[in-house]
Image (cartoon, rainbow, N blue to C red):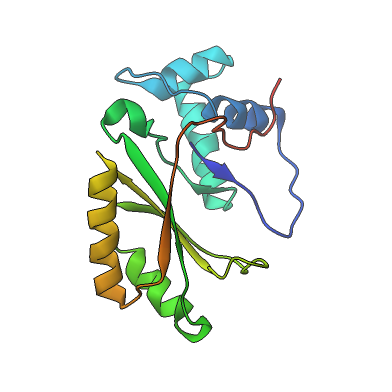
Length: 167
């Protein structure tokens, strides 16, 4: 799913651009030429669709374009947010090392809250809770950080991405 934004500038988009952005936020058809199918949905040619898409990318309106994997349906039955206590002067370096692990999908620095000293957070996905623990032990050893808590997901209540230009 693409991530749209320009940070601190306001940009005027055409109606066609808005339609394409709205379409790109939906499931992309699993066919040989998905953009052709999507173009037909809004009454333009595949070439026009791709040209607008390239223009949006060139103008940095699209920050990334990727698939959203439903990890539970693909065999990853356990996921844990790992809260780490890392010395502030080591957060940047530690986060960069953690981010190299393929099992980590998110890595954030956040301010500690009263009664909660943790300041670095990672999301780890695995086939079991035991595997999550093993992965976190490997990460812990690699970065020299032993003060952490695993918070396992028990039930997904909502998981959506931001939607722009919905009808």
